[in-house]
Length: 111
Length: 115
Image 1: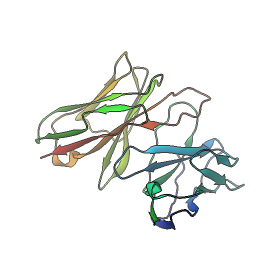
Image 2: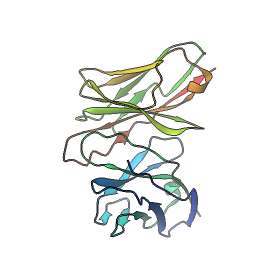
Image 3: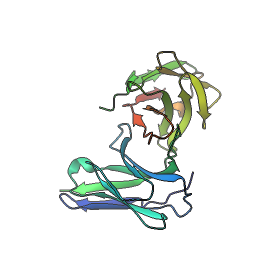
């Protein structure tokens, strides 16, 4: 699985958009970008994933650069409940594949 | 609520003991994964089962073992426990079907404390 690089921590004001970057310069053509988050000591929560195109769901948007070497997770209107560690993971999408977690980005939403 | 259940929530035991952690996957999910999260190691993959068979192994100690039963629930057995085994243990499940996105859904975890 390709290695990812994320900032250790970020802050964002409540109500503003939180933009979390991730670098994955060694990503292969068949690897997807997945985002999970972990709120305090709860189980990690799936947020979104994508291959090439930008993706949006009820939780977030995922913007993947054209060369696929980096991506940005966007939480459009951050709330205090979005305070969590966010993990960017690159892996092959199909079948049953383990997740390899890095250190992630600790996002703090400030009132 | 992810649909994945884990029991017990908390477990306190002594060094040298053996414990069993239980996981019930989401309805319809065939694959179960076990992860360990300790303060110094972060989230680490231990082992994966698919429809009753071991599919992949990560950094799982020989003192640890797991199995997945015909009803698809899984158990993680930890024996000869050491202080360093104190951690959060998460179970996750996915449909694990080729062509599907196969995101994993995590349970709430079992917090193991070895004294």
